[in-house]
Amino acid sequence: MPSIRQSIRSSTASKRPTSAIADGQIALNTASGTPGMFFKDNAGNIIKAGPAHYGASAPNSSPATGGSTGNSFGEAWLDSSLTPVGWKVWNGSAWVNATPLSSDTVQGLVELATNAETQAGVDTARAVTSASLQSKVSDSVSTASASGIASSTAVKTAYDLANAALPKSGGIITGNLEIGSTGSFTFEGSTADAFETTLAVVDPTADQTITLPNVTGTVITTGDTGTVTSTMILDGTILNADINASAAIAGSKIVAATTSVVGAVQLSDSTSTTSSALAATPTAVKAAYDLANAALPKAGGTLTGNVNLDNQVDARFYEATANGTNYVGFQAPASIAADVLWTLPATDGTAAQVLSTNGSGTLSWASATGGTSISVGNTSATVTDTGTDGAFTVVTEGGTRLVVDSNGFAAYTGAIGRGAPVTKTSSFTLGVAENWIITNSASTIIVTLPAASSWTGREVSFKHINAGGGLISASSNVVPLAGSSAGTTIYGSGAGRHATLVSDGTNWVIMNAGSGS
Image (cartoon, rainbow, N blue to C red; front, top):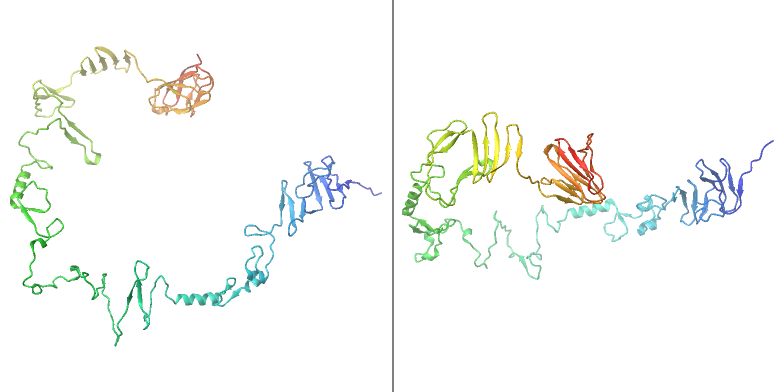
């Protein structure tokens, strides 16, 4: 016998089943106006299988008591509040209009414009057809319509007419330009006013031609005064015969000569004047020549007398021009008790020899003794070397302070200063002269250490005085006190934390650390 399967159903308007229905079970709503068939998907969501909802409000916008809320993915709604009615689909979070009205930025439904609407040209929502567009096309070149469309024929006619005319901005006329008996050529000056210059002609009795010269200049008329200049008169045009016998040129009319102007000039015997208007006589030139001939040329020469450099003036020897402008030189002391003259040796010495004085001003080459010492008062620096046991000794105020032996061992008597401690309250880059660092921050401070390869053997000490914070390196270049791979930690939080780092040429090695107070 056939079986009858009865689904869950409700006749309550807009009521939808909840997720309590069984998998595969169909739920029906038989209410007129809000019918629907529903089932549950494998994610537990209630899915509406149909039919599409029609109305001005979204389906299930006012859920019935006891029914589920919201809408299901892919659910359809014919929205009657739109003109025309719009088809909307639920995308899981919002209703998407699948049939929007088109615009210049949105694809959608479009209404075709009539011929009248096309010709009116004010509608921005309807689409123009080829037939309605054709109704606006015109071949006329005389219509003043602002809504018509000019055809290619009309445009071509207008273009040809314009192309055969002379633009107001100027152009080239390929034929003769004839101005009629009632016309004229009028020029406006640089000021647009009521005054113009008109080019006119006397009524000709025959064809006449005026040829303009191939130069730039000003036109001269019979009414001109003071327009003709000397440059307009060809050289040699005015001859001696053209000058009246009674004419005379006063001396004041002759221009004075300068370095750029030909004219009258005055002679002078002076060798000290700076005037650019006087001309030197042979006497002045001879005096200047004799003075220069007795001087030493910059290119070099032979001095027959002493060279005296007064008032501590330097004797300078410059490096090659291609290498710069530095020099080495000699300078006399500010005060000298008596004249001192050193006589150089006549020959060159041998390798490693030094200049030595005999105490009377005579210099000679001498071999350096076993030790070389520089002394000022009770302070000296001495280098000694017998071939196997060289040493360097520094003495200040009679006391030996530093001795470096041939093995490189340095013995120092006294105290060494490495600069005052510097306090850091935020992340920083370790400076060249910073060796004692105090960190004081409740937050972790990051220090950028210099490259260990550039500071082999450098020692830096850090101390923390804040209960919080700590200190880490910006790079993994810190080897812990216990060894192992390099990391970033120098010390953690806690007042009294301290660490001493020494560069091994590759990383910064923690040599001493603690958390003492």
